[in-house]
Amino acid sequence: MLNSTTLAPADIIKLVFFSDPGHGWLRVPSSMLFDLGIAEDVSSFSYIDACGWVYLEEDCDFERFHNAMKSKGMKYEFTEQFQNHSAVRSYQPYTSQRCRASMLHGCHEFYVNIHVESETGRGRSEQIAVTCEPNQLITSIVNKANELLPVWLDTLKSVSSVVIEPGSVRLSKTAALHPIACPTLIAKNCA
Image 1 (cartoon, rainbow, N blue to C red):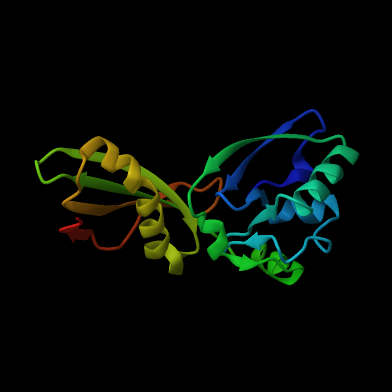
Image 2: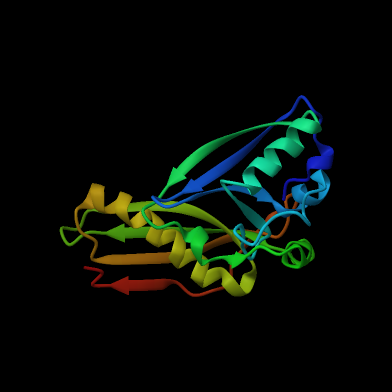
């Protein structure tokens, strides 16, 4: 997780802005809110996920973050990810207690291989990374695969099977990759 205390004011922090037709949220690491001194001021209109990413709602909380960054001489930029219905809406409403607790739990970076095949036998393979707590691995993989499905459908026109094979896991930013010990998941007849 990004720790803003290690950043010099000249560094530019790269973030992601998630949006759907109704709203938008800037994703920032929970530790950053404490570093900026605004963790207690963020509203419950923002969200927090299981890995400690906070999604600051675009109206008030994003502006609060922007002003705090500016006052510390820190810079950021973001890319936007638009979806018709953002997964952000399914996360827990933000509280400073959840934010503090998220910093105590560890999320890991899992890599899995997904092979998608069409009814005509054309296929596409991709390695994806998901960051989550171990007990959320399957749900996180399925959510990521569902995000990618529209892209795959553009290429393949139909999907008849999805095979998810274990890859590896990184337990922390500096740790080596280890094999994931879990079975291969296969979904057939994916209309």
